Image (cartoon, rainbow, N blue to C red; front, side, top):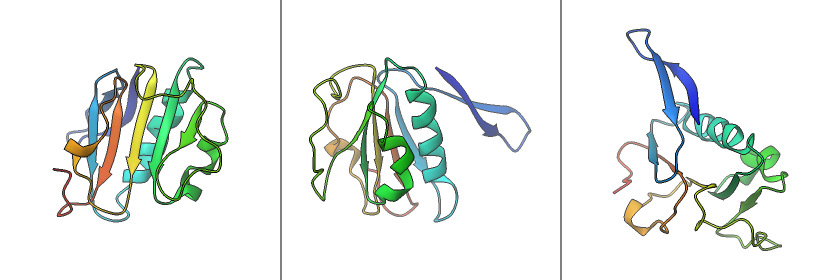
Length: 128
């Protein structure tokens, strides 16, 4: 799935292709649009009714309209009151894993996922 996300400084179209196995790390300062980009990509991914998403996020209210879909589930702390349905699993290429956390993320510690993975990080915090 190819998605137009903006334009480069040279006014070229900037597109991201969400495919199984993709690891996208969105670096940027506070307020630069990392979360907005991550939400936009998750919505586009979930527009295909076959796709699913696991959301590992600190500010769940920012993803509330995505998580109300049956195809998306929160993971992480605090625990989710209901566990994700069995059909939502990072072991499937149609499952997007999105990590938008305030603490530094060690990319090596992310669970192996067959589907695309999106991670947000501030410069100086390490997505190592």
